[in-house]
Image (cartoon, rainbow, N blue to C red):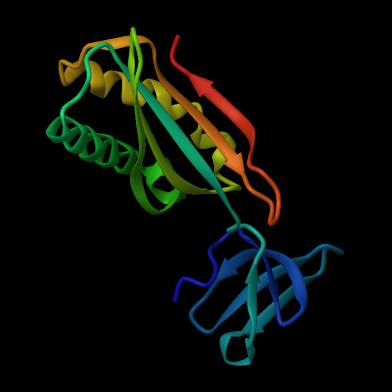
Length: 171
């Protein structure tokens, strides 16, 4: 079921803590007060993860030429396979990477891609994405505009507008 992982902050049957050890028949949960609880799996009824909340990541790729539909599809597959090839990024991505928008301007054409990341992983994963994608895009012989890759993270609270939280881009 993948209900929890080592090191995650969870609440098990109303008991908050961090998972320190996962064994064959039980797990060890370190409570906020420092006490270590050994909980047999057979006694667990409800698990709430505090580490798996999500943020939305948006990647903007700027090209000097307008990409055809076939090029957009190829670019989406290239970006997806590149991000999933990096273990830290792959572990943080939740769900699909989708083409969000294509904007054609006078000097550059922007492709927007979005996907969800685990909030807890976002600060460490964010700096990896622009450089990784820039290398791959350059090797794919795409004509890139200045500031070719920009990544931003957006968190949306229920009932409010999304606000940028973290951002990174290529020089």
